[in-house]
Image (cartoon, rainbow, N blue to C red; front, top):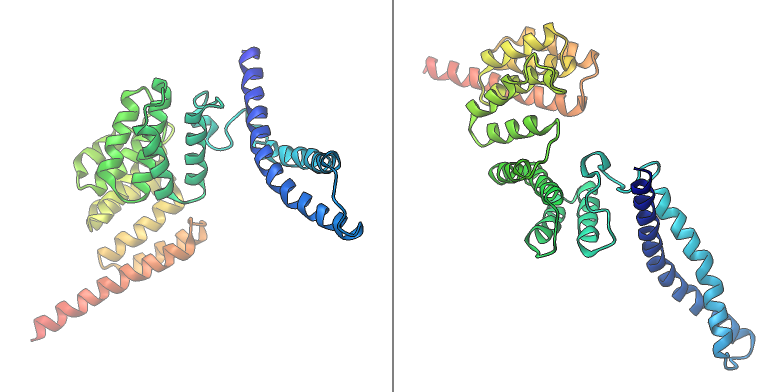
Length: 302
């Protein structure tokens, strides 16, 4: 264990040195050129000896390399190797080889919010003939699945999640991710079945299961069924603020606007996530339902 830890930290140091070198040489070229220009001007543009030029370049290079090295190492904090998602990636892609560099570029791009760019990188790695362990293949498939899910391409996300699990990948969030993708793809029954297995279980995300089921039915505009699940979550104080918010939307669908307003207020008081976005969604749903009521009323009069 101690040897493995030391080896991984050594790889991290070597990788940081390599990245720092690239930046240091680039900065050194600029600063050395500026130094040569200043010397040329000060000496009346006499020729500079090669030895003097090399001394200047290395004098500038070494401090720059140290500075960039410590900046690179600092990014990792207390993490052993990976800057992002070390609990997910673990001991995979910890080398200095091409596959590890490509993978790390993909993870960095993913966490920068460029999911299309990240998907392209992970797909390139997945399609390459670079040797990968079963664990590494599973992780690449998982990240491809996440990119597809975030981008709204749910069938592709499910395919990659399946591939990840076939290669032994496990993650507590996976049932929730899979259920969301299935629901968005129209397979409500399978999605709900997955979440029902989490209800009242010892799974890490069992406390979100009722909320997630409510969200599925809410997207189907089935306010009554959605409200049933939200109320159960509220009674058990599971994902409490989000369940209150879901109930508020469900009451809008059921045209009980007084209850909707009451639960909206409770959700806000309990610090629902993204209150601005939730407020806009609540108002949009309420306005759409009211407009539907008005249209129905006008039709009946005519």
